[in-house]
Length: 289
Image 1 (cartoon, helix red, strand yellow):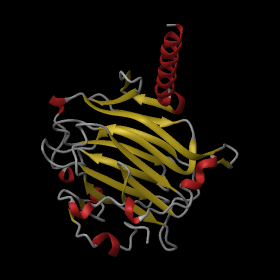
Image 2 (tube, rainbow, N blue to C red):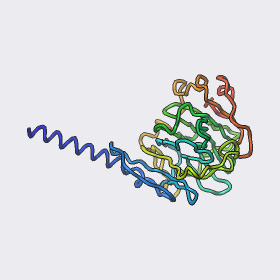
Image 3 (cartoon, one colour):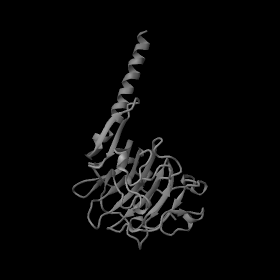
Image 4 (tube, one colour):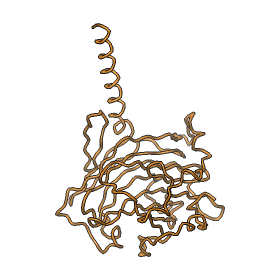
């Protein structure tokens, strides 16, 4: 009996340790702003809900600044009619005209329509590097994993472990390689551009809107105020990373997948279907080649 009591106590202790570890990711890593709530799942995982209503949106931003790394989070998006909303996970050096930024933005839609994931890379204020994808699943039905890998040569965007885009550094294109960035997640009113180029604004009768985040991780080089950076021992896993063929999402086989290089915020074209050969032929860096 004593042995079983000991094992039971050990199991409880391990569960509490896991819960404490998973529960601490928000407070240990981020400031919060606006309408942000937290709760805990039965597993002990902390969930952060970012809310949007007519008075305010919300978000969180990292204490640390990073110069290169791998950043991952799980998100569950707004169910039903989310038209006009923008949910995001991104890195940015700030808000100046010459800022650097790496974006994963989820543009809301009317009920039943596919969700568009907008990826973009800003360097020295130049942000005309957008590619957009229709997600091949319902991102509001369950959590899905989104990853940004940023190294001196490539920026890799992943969904559920599948690479959907790789932006390669070219000599004649601006590339974010010298300015540290903070990690951000936000939910905001993007009625002016998010859905059908601004034709469908937010229906506030459905507010408050909420996006849930959990299981954040960062394996990254932390920048210091003195200008240096400290990289983890695991940085070799992503510092020179290029995705293998097996990592690429089979986008050509998924009917909802689309892409575009047009800047949607500037009134460009809506996403159009990508033939299977489009990625390999695209010189702007959809593939790292």
